[in-house]
Length: 325
Image (tube, rainbow, N blue to C red; front, side, top):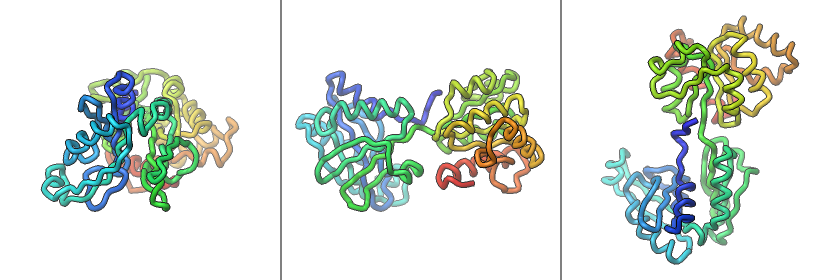
């Protein structure tokens, strides 16, 4: 997978540090008003002034780099507070300005190399992890436990004590589509805009072609083989659009044994009833099968491929953010 929306900011900071250049990570920890970047946004700065990422869309990066050079030299963490003027905010697409609070941590100093390496390893393994820092004591830790709501909503921020900041590092969202059909052609661009990295699988090469799906990762493998290699996890949505049991059922059985976030299958109520009968005969309980959204999508009265795609994306978002169809 390309994971085009997955930033490499912590990874780049670690690489710069290990190359002997020095590095610091700047993280937006609090905002007021219409700040240009959300809480949790990061900027990596090298000791030579190179940067990756953004904490303000360009409004305050120059000042952050200056402070980062000093922090790298001294090894201490520091907090920075910037006001973004209405004029600067307008330049990055906002109607009005705001205030940004930034935590600046030099790698190898306040932020230990080993801890950053552990964070990078978790991200590479697609393991959701929270980086927790007490801004009063300076204590830092990584955890995969607790913070369920923050993980579910991709929401970094301060806890109620006002000093414990939790930075959420979730794997990028992915979409596994079985069936290179008309609905898929509408669904994939929408999914990309919603932050999903899609893979379209269809053994029929005339369907899964670059002409029909430009700039989309395609696979002509048998869907089950492709799904096993892809890995269905809690940050993945599975959409089955062939309503062909030979293609869909093996992937459905794999998905029901996984923690995949969303399972949607195309077909009428009658088709879905037969699907459930086959799965029941294969040993799956009614509770397990209830994870399948079938007929797929929210009931919007959709009647054409684009409208059906909208209903699917809406249901995916609902499942991701609220956990219920």
